Structures are given as C-alpha cells and as structure tokens.
Image (cartoon, rainbow, N blue to C red; front, top):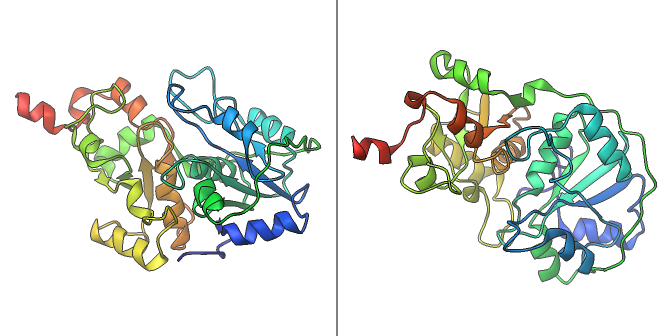
Length: 294
C-alpha cells in the first residue's frame, strides 16, 4: 500500500492514533474532518458532533468557499482561506491531517488536501482509509468538541495548481495539457444525468473514475497499481495534467493519486463540469446521448 513519504501525502490510522495517544494533536498537528454529504442523506456537522477523532475540528466546505460564485465549492480568496483555517488553529507550520466519513473511504478529504496545497501549504496529509477504517480498526472517538487556539495563516494561491474556464477552453485546441475526468463512466459518456445536469465531457478528456484508485477496503491503492491505471489510459505523468469532475471534488483524487507517484503539479479545474456545462459552446460538450438523438 502507498504510505508515508512524499511530504506525508498519506498517513495511516495507526500513525494518527499514536499521535492522538501521545498528545501530539495541537498547534503542530491539526486534524480536520472535511466530511460533506447531500443534505437529505446525512448531516456531516451533526455526525461530527456525535463522534470524531479526538482533537479534530470540523472543516466546513460550505463555509470555506467562494459564496459569490454560482458554482459549488469554488476556492475562496486567499484572505478568506487564511482567516478560516487560522480560526481552526492552523498556522503555516502546522501539519494538517484531513479525513472524511464517506462510506467509500475517502471522498471530500482530497479536496481539502488540495485546497491547502493550492494556498501554499505543503504539510498536509489525507488519512488513508478515512473515518470508516478508523472505526473499523477500533481507534478512539469522542463527542468532545475541541476549541483550538486561533493561529495566523498566510495564504498564497499557487495558480499552477488551478485551471480556469478560459484555460480549459484554450486547451481544447492547443492540447498543452492532458485532461483526466474522475466521474463515473456513464456521466463522462453522457448516458446518465450528472446530479440533475445533462452529462458529457470536455473534448479530449480521458475518463478515470476516482474510485479506481481506492481498494475494496477504501484505502489508496499501491503506487504500482496507480501507475498502471494511468498507463492503461495512456496518461503520461511526465507531462502536464489537469483533473476535472462534477464540481472540483473527486478531481482532487486524481491529483492525490498522481502525487503519490511523484507528480506534484496536477492542476484541478475548479469549476469542472458544473461550469463547463453552463458556459461552454455546444460543440465543446461531448455526449453519446446527443449523438444518439441526432
């Protein structure tokens, strides 16, 4: 299994449990629950209040975003991000570990991981296997909510890790970078609705569903397996690569998987299909469903 290394992109449940037991959670190590679920299905904040990893704080992706944007979960400004994570006790010297409680193992945590990296923070890790496996392994949980001491965080957006709509449009003809779409195959092909939207994909994009990188237990696959997944789809990790999905969340799984293979510069198209569907011209939306109607 892919484990520690590469600036600790992943940490194991046993490593974090030892850190909790040893009392290391504090100014130097912050644990953040980045769970989010459709409101009618589960309540992430309520579940956090009922049980979470000792010392953890709740990273609310609904709060830490650009609320002026018509698209879900777009990156906030540098100052907004700095103020938000500073309020969670995160400074530029803090090692941050993010996790979520999704049943697949890891879903929203890579988005939080990428956000920290996009704003210049390198010491950030994803809990491999997520809260699901933390519980399965019998590690401690608590309902006690910790009030971290606020810290000063200075954010500086690394624009190389973010792709805009205009850059994605230009790339359709220039092909300066590869594009990998992490949505399920049916949504990529356009044969099933994408959360209420007509589906399809950006011209030239390759489809690798994010779940491909997770094992049956919900842990990240080995580096060798991840490399083979990219090779099978003819994605060259030595060349520029951008990831996209429905709203910029599971695309971050692509960035994490590539990072584990040593590629640290995968960009995420923040607006993803949500923005592309509403802004791109019709001929830039590839869909088998549309071809079938023609």
